[in-house]
Length: 274
Ligand SMILES: [Zn+2]
Ligand SMILES: [Zn+2]
Image (cartoon, rainbow, N blue to C red):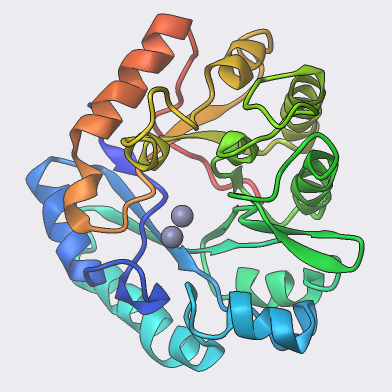
């Protein structure tokens, strides 16, 4: 099993459990060398309409800015000091990309060791779409646009779960298939990651999120088969842990096996480049 993780969530995002120290204790017990704590960043009302903000933003699955500054960041900084010399702790946020959010990503970047880019929602025709349930052969290009525009800001070290668009993708026949649109989008995301020197993450939590399906919704085999054609692509495995126990679990082992089976080269340690 790998001994690093750069994608971990704390209690502050309202849909995870555990404090920084709970994660660090698990990491130490399993001889981790590095742990990145990367909870969901706040969303600001200026990113979307007020009704969308009520639906997507307000205390739904992110912390408030006040919580980020007065609770989350001080907790991670204190843990860094307390465990110095035992394990390398990195502070981070997982952030969405919107056309109006660059200033905020820059503001947060100055306060942490790195940023993860996670496209759980995206802009399309002046509305916010949900990456889990509203991706089809048309909207997929706007998921792609958010991912690409985000990577091109130079603010993000990793695009996490790049293949999340396959969670409930619907083709032109309203069926779940990996069609030519998916293949095009996959290639564009992979090529942009290489061009911008951004890591792509093979997300172990996707296997957990697929547990009621016949096949993995994500990680998506076809996406990673395309990724395999690009040996220069940098790939890490992320726990996307929403519970300290998920730092070491069967889903990580399955992700590692999947990578091995496909012949994907996994970077165990992530360098901070941006
Ligand atoms: Zn989450
Ligand atoms: Zn996450």
